[in-house]
Image 1 (cartoon, rainbow, N blue to C red):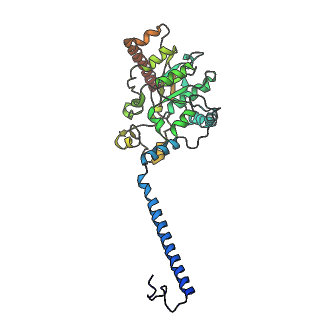
Image 2: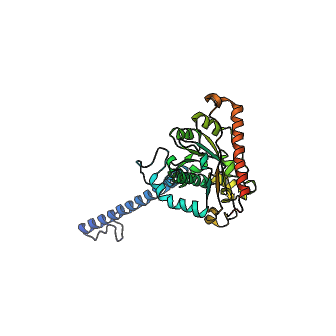
Image 3: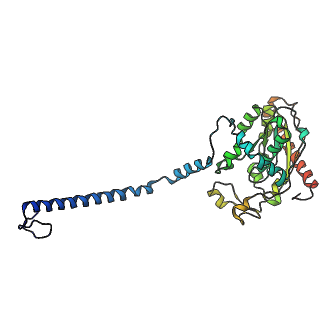
Length: 333
């Protein structure tokens, strides 16, 4: 500091030593405060930049996994090894009864064709995007034959990626569709409801309703043969009008992780309300099981036999659908 300089905070020769010392301390204090303020503002600006380095894809994946279990509580003592929760199922029974009795007015026939004891593999036509068909069929079977336990319905792979959908369906009896899960269920004595049309069946447009798609490579027949259980055809009439698909949009659907985006008479015209299913009249008819008892276990390796049985099963389900369509008077009952 130049003691000869003039100024309010500079050393003035007319000031005493004590006063000069006080001014020096004030100046040093102000300089220290300035450095402190500058250092804090610079550190805050440096800390505000890391958002640019966030892994947004990983963050989105974590958020999606958390949403899949949103609102769910852990009750390990009440959830079985396949995800069914008796508490959730009991709470959902009034809603399931309302849908079954009042909304879709489901009629279930052919119960006498089911085996009196033991599990069976029930194979039905795929009806619509969401598995209302499997849920209603399993509910009707449990009401009519409670001693057989609740049948488990298989759901498509793409459904388990949707937030909220898969956990709730699992707690009501839905299981991911694959051979391993079907085998485990049957070996544990639980009947299985399968839809071998898969996504091709769910994606049928309105003009192709009730025309069965191919059943793949005979997976349902092999499953029944390997587990020595009855293979039962089922025709569901009415469910394919609950979500009539006029046409499909594929481009935007891929970004959402969906196989397609359906356009129905009500969706997307009415937004989320348009996604609600229509109150069509349902008829579920259970046919006679295919005769498999006489076949040896090594029959699963006979490709021609598997192909023939698969086509016979498909033909029987198509016949059940044709009869149901000819017998009904109206889509709405």
